[in-house]
Image (tube, rainbow, N blue to C red):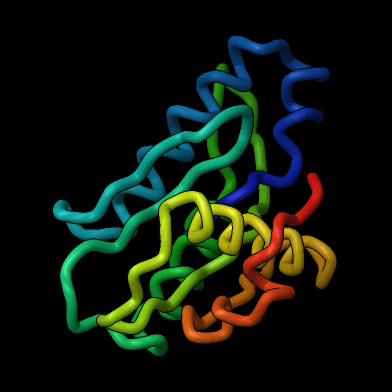
Length: 145
């Protein structure tokens, strides 16, 4: 999953980067609470996070459920420095086939592209991309960003 927060710049502008940093810590904790201990949550940069759901057995319906729970959890108000802050997020989700062997760069780029499609659909949704579709030249090509 590639997660981008909606509204962090406004928090930084209104309350300062220290409050924004505290929001990022809270966001990371909330995402971590939504996934298993074996899953990996990482902040890439700025207001972007990734989640790697490890292990096997998760079908696309279960993965969609996890993405929805993350969206709902991140959409709940948080109290930071005595202020109530509410953000939303957009998520790009990749669902791999067990036999998928694509590079991490291709996977990350595809998840990022899916997240941007989610943003274009309106703040707060997620877009799911299945791995077999990534073998098409248009999806595997660089996004140009």
